[in-house]
Length: 225
Image (tube, rainbow, N blue to C red; front, side):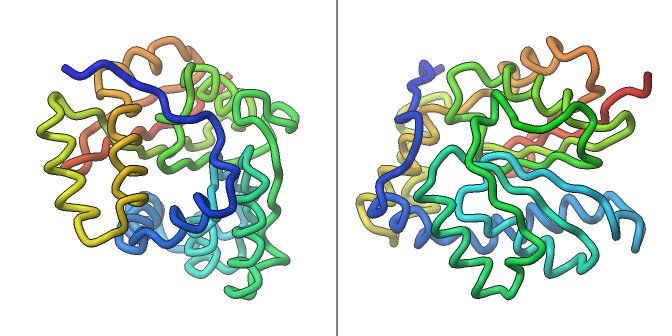
């Protein structure tokens, strides 16, 4: 198994953010939103309060707002450059009134306990040296019975596996974009590693499963007290 190699902590360079934003995320983002919404009957989350952690350029919460017009989403990222791009996307989608963008550390969230009905995140935990700290914060801000839904890459076993996935999923992209995916795969958590993190959060009832050739999905609820 490859050792975990962390990426740079925050992507805050405008050119790097532009490279990231130009990558072909559409299918992955649409599947994330669909896999989340299918867990609920129609109308069940119409007025829920939603927190998106590590929102990046906010394309996932914007897709969610298109599907669920009654929602309001708070989207958090540490990168000011990412949030500037997110604000431009919100204007393009016409959703700037329903998307609150907050610059903050996901391991020290500026929200009160039990503030949100749902916490979402896509491709965040592989950026974090101590992912369990983020999970603890997610548990803290969730209301009892609230849902946590996270998805991220998993680390391949060999360098050859990394290069196969880079060629398959970013083979037509720029070298800078291929390198972003390569670094992310090296930084990702394996399924056993994220399961070990989950066992440290007593407030959450969670399950982890492989959900694609390169992703795992974590889903569950905060236990009632």
